[in-house]
Length: 296
Ligand code: UTP
Image (cartoon, rainbow, N blue to C red; front, side):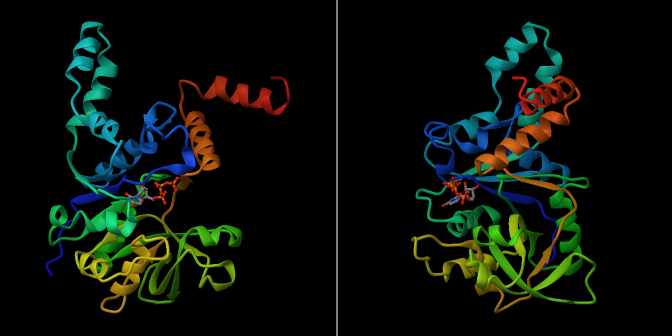
């Protein structure tokens, strides 16, 4: 297979977002804002800043707001223009102008592996990225760019991993790995992968987080991956199958990750990004202090 630049990023967004009910009954969790930007836009901007400008969004029922968000809104643009709100106009245009979007429906949410599998025709025969927008990573260089640099060196699938506390490990796919002196610090050769292991069976404390660089042979592996007990096709299990036929790598990235897919992680992310915003950080900091000191 010829090695090409990573041009495409798949964003699986067809999950039901049950942890955020009732907020997600009629709107996708990907559109919940961190301050004033929807969660998914952080991921799309990361892809763009990493040199990836084709976004393949896997959507399902009730996800129209995501398509509308990245589409041109003539009505809104005309309104902002007529009111002379040019800075806001530029911000709104930036979203729809920068990048090529394609959408594919998953039909039924049959798991992350299945969500990747439905992009097979659109991805074609080239390596590609997968971004789970729940994981918002504040990093410079961007997390995906750091992974692409590893991919350019190893020319194989690269999973993003992070050390997580023991008590949290069974919420993740976990890797077993072996040292490889030819690899830079923080890059590992994967020897096995286990989806959501019980603590005592976790092969390490390195958990897979929401970024992957995959090669197109993952599709054949996913085709052959059996559904799990819940009837879903897990990407981790597809990768385990792929590991029989080619080396897989994992890397840690420098940056701050927030898991916005759970309530506490979401609130932490809102606080983190609000405190980084020059327009509101001062008064917000004062407010937090007054809450913590019981003055509110
Ligand atoms: P999650 O495990 O977070 O599931 O999916 P979820 O449905 O989004 O949220 P909860 O657990 O019910 O609250 C991880 C990622 O994989 C996507 C989700 O949209 C999310 O980005 N996904 C999951 C799909 O696209 N299709 C699926 O069948 C399952």
